[in-house]
Image 1 (tube, rainbow, N blue to C red):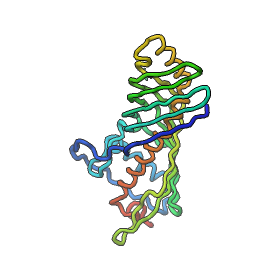
Image 2: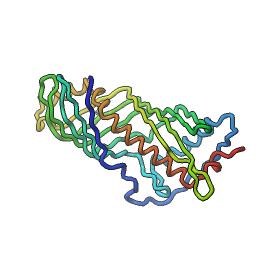
Image 3: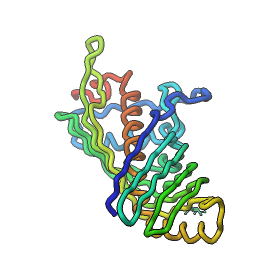
Image 4: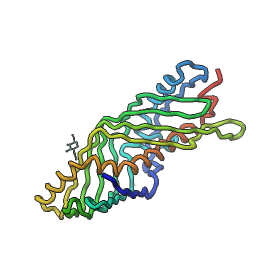
Length: 251
Ligand SMILES: *[C@@H]1O[C@H](CO)[C@@H](O)[C@H](O)[C@H]1NC(C)=O
């Protein structure tokens, strides 16, 4: 299905936790020496250790919780002969991101390139939606609650870092990131289609479900771009007060 997808992420993630949680002990970052022959293993261990903190958020570092990840607005537009519609997902919440498991990390300290792959068993999406359009001559319209389950998600991350000098010390910052999301399976449900008409709603939902992967493919760029911002934000905040040579000492 070729699609024209327009998405807008109106505001970046709410970066300040609404309620300051009681301070909990921050993980101490173990240095990974540059000469460590198993540098990637060391980095993987540190990233895995930080997982519960990423899930809950770290108010001390101004890192928000990713559970759920909130995307204020996604606009989808598809215009082919067979299928054309405009849909809006408002207040999209993505649950399950914190159950990520890193499969591998590959860090090159010379180029400051890092690539990684992580898997997420189940993601659950929920949002308000409005949709209006046509699919195979069948009109589709409605507004209500959109829900979807995505299984076996794989996230590939490629990140280019850079070193910046602050008061004579070098700190790591994100220069560029690429996030690619791949989904194993998808199911979706649009509640209250056609003002709650049960027959039309059920028929349309089963049609949409057969095409759930295509629908998700269109929501994907928005999720990728928010996850991208989120990763940049977390990495920048974690390294903000940690000089590069403290994390990756020369020996
Ligand atoms: C998503 O998964 C949950 C738990 O398995 C299930 O109850 C729900 O009906 C599913 N929703 C959709 C839209 O597939």
